[in-house]
Amino acid sequence: MNTPTEPTKGSVNRPTDRQSGRPGGRLRPPPLRNLLPNILTVLALCAGLTAIRFGLEGRYEFAVYAIIIAALLDALDGRVARLLHGQSKFGAELDSLADFFNFGVAPVLILYTWSLDTLGGLGWVAVLGYSVACALRLARFNVSTEDPDRPAWATSFFVGVPAPAGAGLVMLPLYMDFAQITTFNTWPSLVVVHIGIIAFLMVSRIPSFSGKHLRLSARRDRALPVLLGVAMVAALAVSYPWATLIGVAVVYVLTLPLAYWRHRVLSQRTRIARASRDRELDV
Image (tube, rainbow, N blue to C red; front, side, top):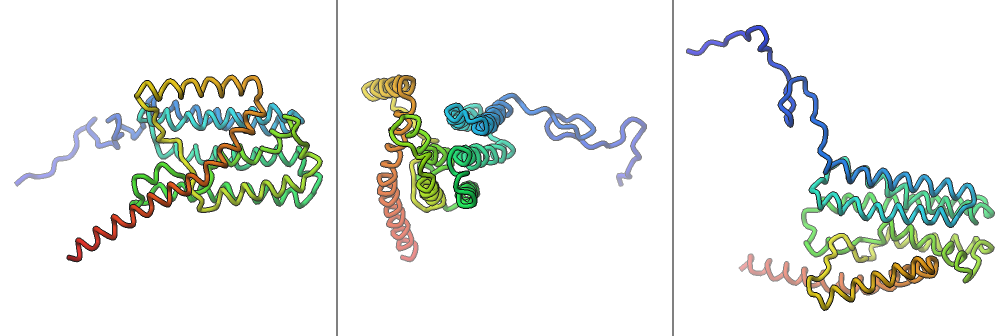
């Protein structure tokens, strides 16, 4: 019969790190592929904070530029994480918190210092309403990604307008003022109504297209027009930045009915397929 033996000197059991195998329970530093997406997220958060600083200083054009930079970095961090296989729970939580600040707090604070402060309490109610709507929208998105019954095609859609797009739409009065189309600064009540509409679109069940799984076609006859279109939009953005942003916002709003129709068609197909499968099982 085997009898237990006492550990000899120098062979005392110690907690072992699962990743590195070293004693003491010390974790191995995360690889660079996990760190790089988080760096981009932190840079986006810094851009959002800088946007608020520019707004407090009255440099509203630079404030809008900072929000746009934050949106670009937000679009990059997820793609870089998927490309490097560096997704992590920490990165997802950090990205969600940065999105709330950059797109749920900074844009409306800029609008408040630009125009809404003249309305007093009503202007602040609009700021609070939009920020809460953004928080609810992000919380719903985080929960929906864990739904096991979610069909595969649903990843091509968002439920409601996503936070970065909402930030871009809510700053439309600033674009129009900078483009000298109209001065919403003198009509703060209209700005409040506009903020309320965008907040509703964010918390609504209206589907919108998601670009996370967008793939360019490998066919040359389709790739070249896409590249030409990107070059033209970039040239317009450099020469006429505010008019280009207005155009992008209008085009995005026009895609919402198309997304609703496409989502409805796919939902009907899924229901029919499930009903047919259930009948076959009953038989």
